[in-house]
Length: 134
Image (tube, rainbow, N blue to C red; front, side, top):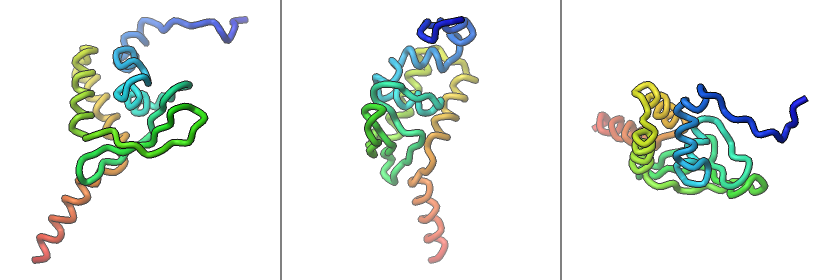
């Protein structure tokens, strides 16, 4: 019977997956991009900082999400900076792991799905609606 403490090495197929390559490149949850990466692919760090399973973009383009410094602390809301900067960081990450077009599509689809509310879009729709009332 295999010991639960035996470290298993990932298969070649797993190592070739963009998610595996990206986690290694982003240093898992030890960087902001790595922590967001784990959140968008549905993985949770067992130690250290954790980012919430969803995010909100404010009207000014700033990204808000939950953040817990360790597994024993309740999450607080933090500002990750602008969505433009976050997207740029993910583009850089995709370049560094030499992601294919399909892998990039999957990465950015997951990033979009992580954002549950984009108040920029809601605000823009309201402006259009109110402009038609004049």
